[in-house]
Length: 527
Image (cartoon, rainbow, N blue to C red; front, side, top):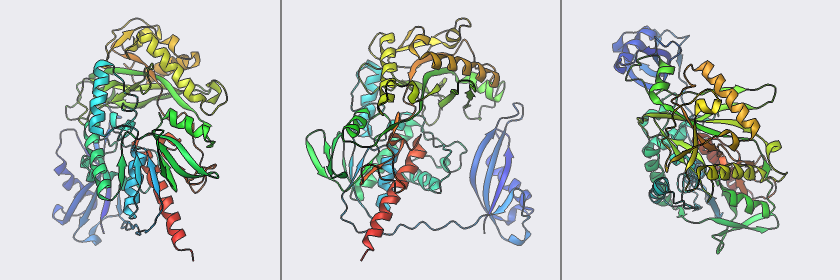
């Protein structure tokens, strides 16, 4: 039986082959007794700037287990339960809407059960989508159905490709193994903060598509669901592009957090929706070298990864929080609009994270009390207003309004330099934000600087406006994961209000697919 060893440490630059000797010493056996060693987790401990360590958890097997000293950092590894997916024969007409992480992993999971589905994606294939997005960044030509938000792979395709999540789920390993199978770097299986990068993620998405097609799935791009047919209150069909109708017994709806017209269509159809909190703010960009120095100390070892950060601040009097979100080491700030006449900013990194800048969203919580009116769509109106203000301040052409961080705080001047394309226009950002958001953001930035001395820097630039942190509403679902108002409709993933990032969205897609398979299996066993 293998053993798990925690807290093995190396200094930056030391070779990982030294882990064998460290593992043997911790086990109390000679190196020759260790028959295998594999990495389980690798992270950076930067709490002591002068003594940064790489911290490992490894799994080993030994020749004579009786000689092993158990306890503390040494424990036995219980054999993992075997994954079993009973094959199901069903005539159920399943339609999956959306090819972001939730939709793709729901489809992959259904394929494990031998099931197939019609998959509808309003955007284009990832190769064509990447060209469309590149043209938008270069020339400001926005395609409403093919952009950073819409298309194969979902919004996460143009991001850092982070795979961290607070969700404790036994399927996390399954998701990571699938991603590696389709071309993700193997180190995501053991990295403490795994990421794929936008460049690698696009190839992974294409590989998943090819697997689904070979498994019998029908995939249709440029196919926007514009309506749902009902039999009573049960879903019976979907309308595509306002022209063709497809019968549907089960509708797995994974639309992404920016599918505003889809939300409006569901509202008209009487589907239960509810507004929910999210966060809005700005995106900050520092030189990566500055963030490295803040986090690692002066002259950090060149083999350390580009430094990251995560900060949060809570104003107990107002109940509002400010926090960093979607931090992209060595990345760029990107234009992420999906509607004409609105500016939205986001961040993106490649796998190597080797760009000169580090950027992150700095956002403040908002909720239904901040939104105009009581409609479940009121959060969308709130987002849209901010995006249109930013567009006007930028002067059109999807130029983003920008300001130095120090000037935003009223503490001097600084240079305005941003990687955002198609470009920025320097202006005051405070008037673009709700007063409570701007005030909390300024409080938060000062708090972050107390935790990370140097964060308040004349080299830091802010761009506006960050509004697409999560879905502005939720589609409530019952314990069986179907809509509380419309049986047959399975709201799924981030766009339905049940996830926040690539990993959690994928996990929710799997959860829904398993629920569908369990229902079909139970129905097949009825006399």
